[in-house]
Length: 448
Ligand code: FDA
Ligand code: NAP
Image (cartoon, rainbow, N blue to C red):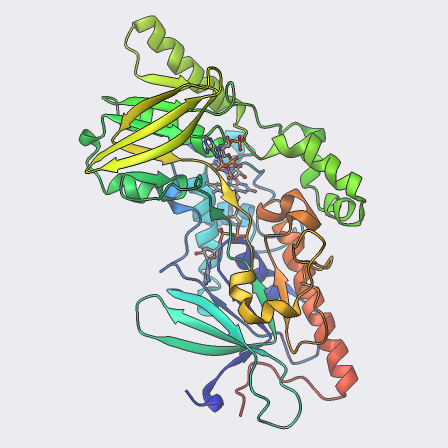
């Protein structure tokens, strides 16, 4: 491809989950900036179509945030892209209110996200994975003002390049498996669940096990218990029992937009306190209703004498061996330190996720970005990664900033505000550059 055909955008978004969808809305609603030159944007998403944790869209699962923490409302309550607007447009607003519930099902929230996405799909290339970045050769007059972004068509039709003046990386959480254990058609991570489950005949699943004590593990345990009425369902729990997610009002303040400032500008002690006291708002915890439901099921089985739901507490998985359709799991009890074997037809590791980490995507260019004493990227308050010197482009992170911005980093709670802050920063820096160079900034043009 000749450089004359390469499109240049003010903003290239990597990934198109809720974070960058919210950013697309914030861009549309952005006012001000350089008159007559709106910021141009393109988004690249590796999935074939929009999807938000589709493999965990289990029946009856609900959102873990209020519907008012949608893609826009906290930034712009007048937005036409709010959850309330969505309900109005599909004729469910009255019934939603009558339902008296702050927490929609994940299925309904997914429908809302798709509804918003339908207004922005012209900016998104699906089946397109961003695989790398490189600096352009300085062929023309003046310094380049962009980075080249390499995009691979996941359908196999090759690779293309687009130019980006700003990159917003929002590639999401990374599934975490215990060390040495590989995923396959019988050993799944929770993020594989529905696709793998649908790929097998349910009648063949007579013994299934779920590892972990977080929300995913509890939801999958209930799902198996519902969907496989003939099966033994074993929950392998590292703790003594499921712990409840603290969503009480005072604790919930850790997800407020103002908590980002308190965390960011606080001391090490401040940040440590957030984690020490409030990790249980999100990690390794389960909704109260679900814990009680699982316990009731188990108790009812005790009463009926037909026991098929087992909770192995204080237990971790030591090893997994696979042979044909059989999976043999070595379990280690934290009480006696003894091991025992369990045979399963399907084994699900609901063992959580690692944070988003942009190093692989940044590749060789990563050396130009600053890191703190723990080796993590230094991220400015506006979510821009700090650089060692002037680079011809900026990189912003939506996700992967728990160390700098706190608990909302990987969640939906602060998306609306964060997206607005990123757009504002990109606009501000563009205006500053235009003033320094005293040349108008062209947007969306082709380079020559
Ligand atoms: P998300 O992971 O949604 O999207 C990232 C996108 O980037 C993906 O679509 C991926 O395909 C794409 N991508 C990755 N690499 C790419 C590349 N190189 N090129 C192109 N595309 C690429 N939080 C909350 O606040 N309330 C809730 O109720 C829930 N519920 C919930 C349920 C489940 C099952 C999970 C696992 C997590 C949650 N969360 C949550 C947390 C969750 O992180 C959050 O809901 C959003 O998914 C965050 O949106 P993002 O867009 O940042 O990531
Ligand atoms: P999580 O909260 O990180 O929980 C992972 C669990 O796996 C923990 O109990 C952890 O124990 C355990 N674990 C890790 N390694 C293990 C091992 N080797 N052996 C046994 N257990 C092990 O992950 P999650 O449940 O997937 O939740 C992740 C995020 O998704 C959260 O934000 C959650 O709220 C969200 N989520 C939301 C919904 C919803 O909206 N309905 C549904 C699912 C998930 P330790 O505590 O010892 O590490």
